[in-house]
Image (tube, rainbow, N blue to C red; front, side, top):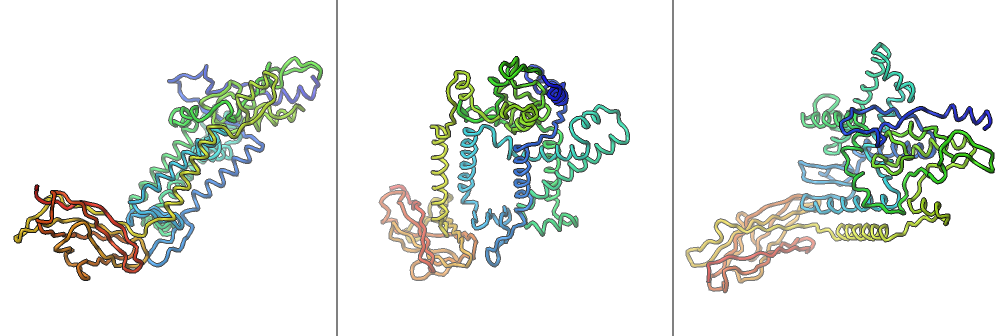
Length: 491
């Protein structure tokens, strides 16, 4: 080996053991802190980009304005508990429409399954909130204390002025990030600019400060103190992902067929005594999870690909091709060992099924939104008493009728009932037009009224007769109906 290559190997080699190596990990062992070295390369830059994008979305979206007309909040994304609404740009959901949220969660789950089956734990490695905030906290730690060696030295150093002020500054910045995280979260539940001013002038409600404090604590604890422990012990996804993946799923992989046997010396180009892995352990020192990717597929690996960047940098210095560590499949590992050609199969039964389900659910959601009713009706028949027998022998039933007007202007609704020949259709304090009452409902509001129906007992052939209550918008003619029953004495 040339003197230059010997110098490269010497400088790159680190004497370190993976903190979370399976053989060294005990269930009751005290956590050993991990000091990941800064990685440089394409995947690190991609992670920085995704971090900036996701954090920008989280912190800035509450301040986006969206005009919904007079009397309506102009915040683009708002969970309005006092008004019983969820606003998302042009979409407005009522509590009765919670199934839309269910649909969104189903789509999110299917998309996660789809990308996991294709690219492994790409969610965990790039866009999981735990990964994003942990990356941010590590970046702050590195900025204050220095890179890996400096942080290890500071950790082992006795307490003194330098250690105290650096540790204090780091934790202060972590708490500020946690506070900003909690503050941004509560902005989704109230008008963001108004609540922001109330928070900084100490005029906000105690509930707002409580949630900011709670989320400050959880962000600081999970992102700053627990870090990889959340992924290893708290998160269920590493244990579920195996069902989402197969032998054709791409994962961050050490190509042992090329790297083994490991060694630090090489003969001439015609004959190599060792594989391409020089056992420098740069892939270990950049890993935020404290594992050695060369040990194979592991629950702890989040596929962040920082080990790829570290290894590619060493390969460049050694003058050997990149890709000793890279995204690969188990099937291709077997094919190389057998000497057959590699292939990447994106269209598989699993991925096609996920794609079809995603399309089907999305299409169904779009259909529901496109045909969303501007009017909703709920009818609840009185149960105590079931019916009242009047002095003239007729039978009366009572019903609670709830009319939901989703329009941005007040409307009048005509209430009609079919199924029997009624003596009277009456709502207390409501004007009747002809035989039917008309109910006024304010814009974007719900009104509950008590409806009374009276029928001659001779017209009841059974003790329970089916009827239909219909409300019709007098302006547009749009109507909705609700089936119920009219109860009488046993025949």
